[in-house]
Length: 112
Length: 112
Image 1 (tube, each protein chain N blue to C red):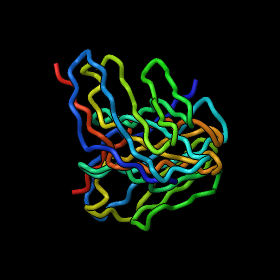
Image 2: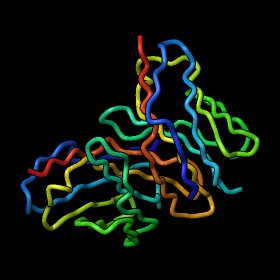
Image 3: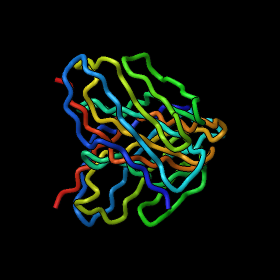
Image 4: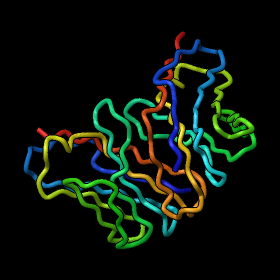
């Protein structure tokens, strides 16, 4: 069966520090991968998606970047965090062009 | 993808059916209706999806009107664990990106 992992579960970082969040998927190959963010009390916002290794599409301009160095690995990064980067970051995957997305457990980031 | 409209909140008594409405008046012929829910501090969970026929699975039933401009998610016997934000999303299967655009959803509060 397929599983999706995210780490860390929680993170507290000072403003201006770098960020690296990792997401990995097991039990599938060539999935579509997605990064979402949920600010406190807000809905989910799609940040990036990838349909293959090295292929990244950005949905909104921001202080973040994404990379997909391996088929089942998706990384969210920032060189310098802002207070507004605080939120709940969710990774998701989907197989093929049909069906549902499966979400990971999320990383709760607090920028202080 | 078509935009959806949902009531911001609803209450339901435990053991009763919860009927969550969604309007998607601009839906096009190749767009599916998807429902997800998000329990507090967790990633969204897929519930059900459909095109034009009513659908039922172990979690819920989806009723889509004949003109496809609205739908209703039915939780037949709501429990306290069904308290969550429910998202109705309309998505085309013709795109290989599989992006989900989340709105604000309906916060369902199941009360004892």
